[in-house]
Length: 113
Image 1: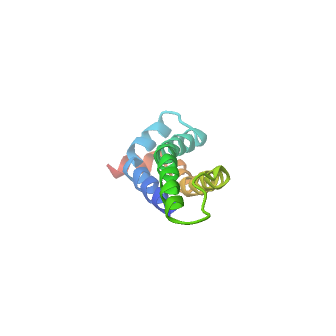
Image 2 (image 1 turned 90 degrees about the vertical axis):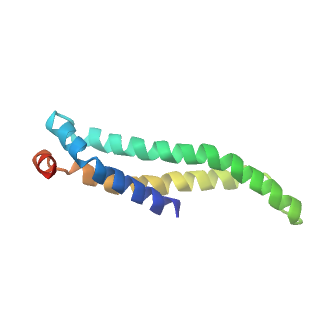
Image 3 (image 1 turned 135 degrees about the vertical axis):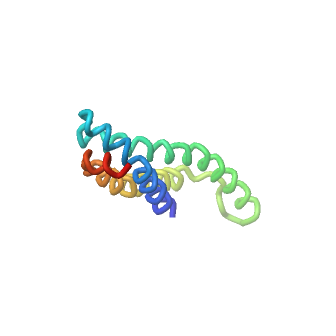
């Protein structure tokens, strides 16, 4: 669910920044720099989500363990697996709009405006 949301936000951001990306490519930015630019923006969002989400997940685990018998409140393995799975899914969700941004023709991007 988070990967689909990240894909949507990243694709919308790339669509809004088409002119800027076209200008960057016209001034000499290569494909790798544009992909890095888009991925950096996407992973800033993922990092912010993890910084806010992990403490909330631990708090929710404590609440659930108080209500259910035999459920531990702290499972670092499960949290690590969830964070790594989110990072991998986020990479694949962000690389699609990043490749689309890197394939923008500078002349076509400047003609749009």
